[in-house]
Image (cartoon, rainbow, N blue to C red; front, side, top):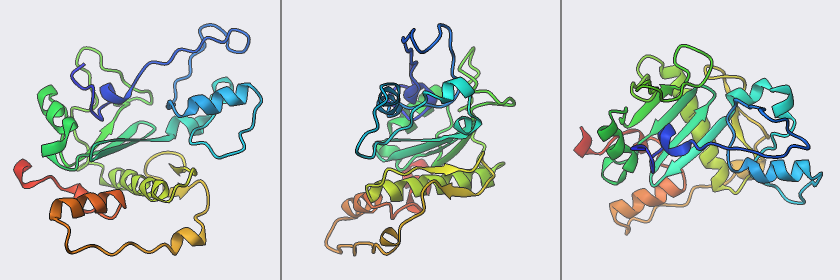
Length: 233
């Protein structure tokens, strides 16, 4: 429980149980990433209702039957305070912005989990299935970013894609084609209107801390978020 209120798996993972005997057989298991934002999309799908507006989530009604492979490598995004993380299939990229304000950094240190500025984890270990924390077998202890920089870079890119889309109020999804090490692809083509959006000029009167926050909100400080504060070095 030490990783609650953090972006480690113990903080973002929750069990989900569904009781719908008329449609879902008892004992059915679906071993692919889903999110709470998928709940409304799935309920509407079972009810045969097509929403008249865009929703941020995907229905798993059909997927739990055919076990669609693309879902196994689906990218899910997480954020807490200034920290962000993205999980695509087995791989997870965790970025800690500033140790002073990061609960993930603090609890990671206490629990013996990797808590550098940039972290890469293989949640499947040497298999193709997610490894739960059993007898200390935690896949977030070791940081793989130096030995797998290409994968880390691709997950960072898909995370930046996600930041850009939510900044512009879009509901399309940033995903990888199949699995990490493959080129990042947007599910929906980026509109020319979005491409032409100009960044807001920086206000020289703002304090450094406020400027950093504004840059974070507009997704302009991806480079600065890659480094820890001086207090960590």
